[in-house]
Length: 227
Image (cartoon, rainbow, N blue to C red; front, side, top):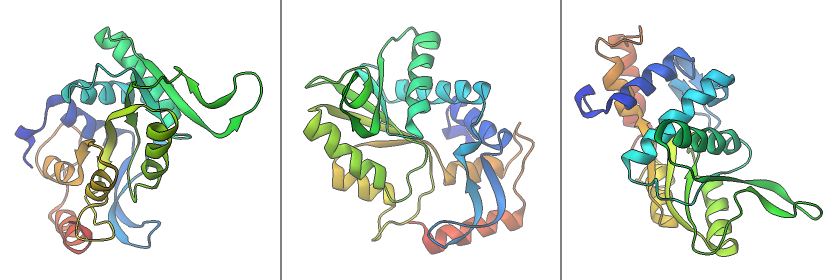
């Protein structure tokens, strides 16, 4: 995908990933044991300024996909907790759209503020946008979707994630395509690894231009593990 097909906020997001060292290039091994030439570590969004800016990108992507009429932004514990809060704040402060945020506890509370959900209290028929960092096998989505649909009786209008690695799941589809098909939900990555590779292979404001060797390494990796 060429740079011209990316919205400005998506180009800015790739620069942001590089500047925060969330996206790095080299020799890494994933949890699944795959040797990969790039690594995405969203744990490095670890300061007030970074998490505030991250929320702006999620908010922009929600608007891009016309999901702003949702009742609440839902973030699965634990990484989704700051994500749903910062996205809700960005929608309110940057776009004057005031909607709720909700996250789940790992274990239901039996006293005081009872239940498994915290924040905006979910009601039957509510429209929910779910926010996640990076989907690998889709485990969290497979756990949360039935909980939200069956227990809370809400509709999931879309899922926003930061980066799609575009890797195969258990079959010939990407892990995200499998999740979308299995759960009947729409997953919208802000950028994909293909976007990143194309953008950083040309002159850009991030200060990082991928070498020919690194471009080839990424291509080989996606040839072997991509879909």
